[in-house]
Image 1 (cartoon, rainbow, N blue to C red):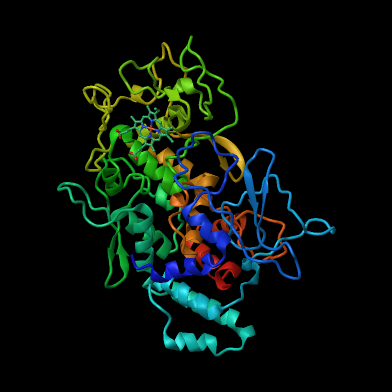
Image 2 (cartoon, helix red, strand yellow):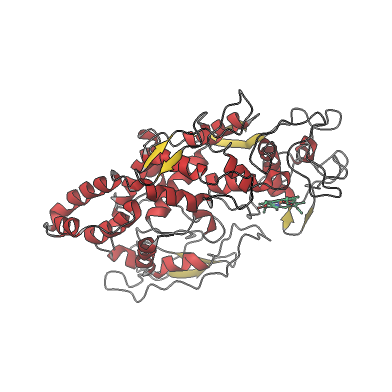
Length: 499
Ligand code: HEC
């Protein structure tokens, strides 16, 4: 990947030690469920931001032990401080005039539009600014540089080479591209090309999940133009659902019970690791239902779905027991959500071709039990009307929030799945966070410490320039879900132009 300068930006920020710590270690997280296997890194060393200054003798980061025995780190400042926990804050020192806003090196960053232009240019067109551009900006008096910088960013974003950059970005994000190494399997280019085209042509990003035709476009790198293309992997009359029906994606992530496909869409569109114990729809509610009549409740079960809706030993003999658990690993915490969703991906065969369920009710994927049978709906969900709860059916989630309002998220087919995903607040937020991450030169969002650490919360911060999640979402929605505009907003933001 040609991401040299992207990394450079990360290195610049890493000068603030509060940030560098977020890359290779995990912050102490009092909300972590016991046995959470997502935490693959050691706890972070206590960040130190150096000695204090005259304005605030307690500047930098203070570390206190909260009553739960969890070490809690608080960090002030305006910068991106992902993963910072703020529970049980009892800052030490600080004098007698009430709570002080702590300062970090992030507050001492200075505007440098020339430096920002270098990074923006690498991100947007994959090359450094020209000498002419450097002088055009750098020779201006400081007060005129902001407007000139924005003008140059707009020129970069209008450059045809932006198409190449977006193609690279989506190959990296989707972890796919090129031809398959297995003969008969489809190219892995179509989904990244489709995504890059939507951004480059400034279309409604939600098409990535809802567009019904032309979802396998092609790209001409010489002319830097996209051309319509059909995926040709669905039966006549069936409509596409954006990249949910992409043959390359379905082929690449083929696997038992279609869980690998589900994992891909889960991680890509929710920015959440599939390895999180709270991987489905975490809730604080203690279990309400037993897996089957006469059984005990599953201790520690935390998912919004009634657990008796999914398959397990007591309702699907010989299948996978998704009611199983031991200390620290409760299958249904993840699978209660996943089993409601995965059957929707199970029609695609290993070549990404959609096949109807056969007369025996069999899908195109297998169950990893003795004899490796083909999967039936009962291998995911409890669907026997005689013994199972009524109306068990596929869904995106049990509930999702749409513009902050909680609602059910059923999905009888891929079309409904795409439409549900496209309006889920969590999907919208994940989308803009990925753009912020890209601009800031950070690693893939689901891979940072095993979960999404990108918060960008609203704060009572005097800095009106601060980029927050709600501002990025508002920008995205008010520009008809134009992702390029979101990228522009980040590139001209205070965070991006200070060093
Ligand atoms: C932390 C969330 C989580 C928990 C807990 C979990 N799984 Fe999974 N499961 C996954 C993910 C993610 C995949 C997809 C892995 C992949 O192929 O990338 C998966 C895949 C599977 C598969 C298909 C594997 C294959 O052969 O391709 C089976 C079967 C399965 N899980 C059963 C279980 C059972 C039984 C338990 C409890 C003992 C369990 N899982 C606990 C997340 C979870």
